[in-house]
Length: 154
Image (cartoon, rainbow, N blue to C red):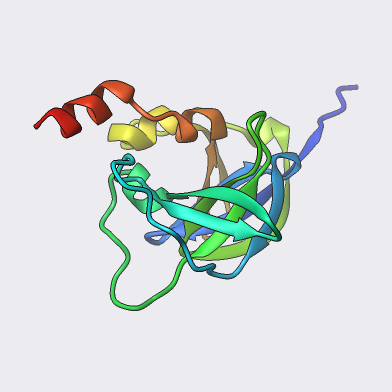
């Protein structure tokens, strides 16, 4: 008899897509926080937030995934991740629930996933009503230094 493990994911939406991150990598999810801009930073870094006295970098997941910028005055939510370098915030459209899924249902990313999304999605779960895209947080937080240097040289 094979025992299948269950996996828990913190879910959120970005541009109508459903994403998940291993719940153990998530510190907390909080409402929008005022940000301080960082001059000459990569465009995906929206700024710094003060989280109870700790300075946290806020990465706009829409921009990181190459999606359209957030419309109008709609404020993003913060999903605070635990990393080796300290907490980092992912700016998302809406925070969902913590879902438990059976690891047997994990599949490779679909072929129709293109661009940066293909690089940062480690796999998917087919859920009722949506496809849960699992983010590789390390890949999401990588900044391409060569692009950054080129943008400042221009």
